[in-house]
Length: 373
Image (cartoon, rainbow, N blue to C red; front, side, top):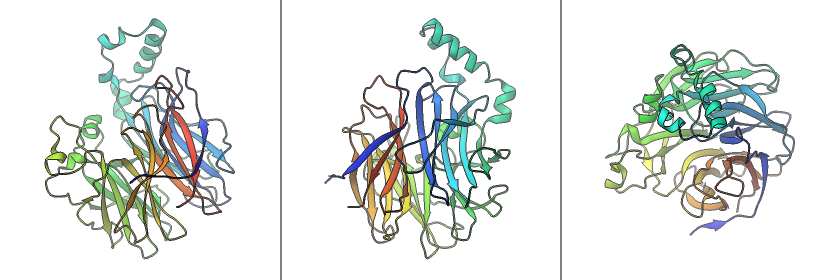
């Protein structure tokens, strides 16, 4: 039974009527001085378009945020933004890029009004073969001054919406979907879920282990993972599990299509247990270990009433109580990708995207503050 939490909500960025007003797929972190940093794929036009940029905002209280600052504006679409604090003022941002040309054939462009068509033609003109070869992929880059200046981007063979985590020993662990460098590989989901480690703040990475599949599922069903480290060093991984094809193969083996699967590693990510579907609706997941010892997993809920929800575990991820409602007022299912940080008073700040009030609105970058029940 779903339980609605007491929560307050607000806006990070919302431009519901602007051509470049769409924000999506965000993340949040907290620097050592207490500053919250949130990123998104923002100042774009819609869910799939050629215009995406990685945008960033900062806040001291989680309620009042700066104007959007552009971190990345590659010649092609910049999507899914993750952010990780590496200590003091050092930040790592992650994202991936996409080739959107196939989504806009001439017959679709012909349906746009002249002004919108002109925007799209200018955006698509940057999607040259040369730019696709140079910029298509999954990326990370580091800032050492809180986000003013950024190092050159580093390309990786995995991607995940919220990027890597910082381990207790200071290393980075990236638990991601294998992405070999073509958009077809990403959209078809041909790669599995693999861990990678960096001991030099993201400058270089080495491959660790991949996640064994649940019986009756396929590698194409596993997407958009996240991971958390426990005080014992055990890693708990959560993975979006979904079938995108017409053949609903997950339902054939009795699984929810658009759910979450769990896996564990006790050797730093070298080996993982077989993925175990939790079998309730909602995804993709983000994991946080709260100071109380509870594991907090937030996820988007794309059935009516649409919104953002949480699942809680008090036994290190062995069992979960799910469907704690953070909010359930989404106008439609274009929403989700929540990510959380703990606040100094034990409250939780969760950021996500959804339309602010109407189906016609551009998706906004929003926040909620809430407490564990």
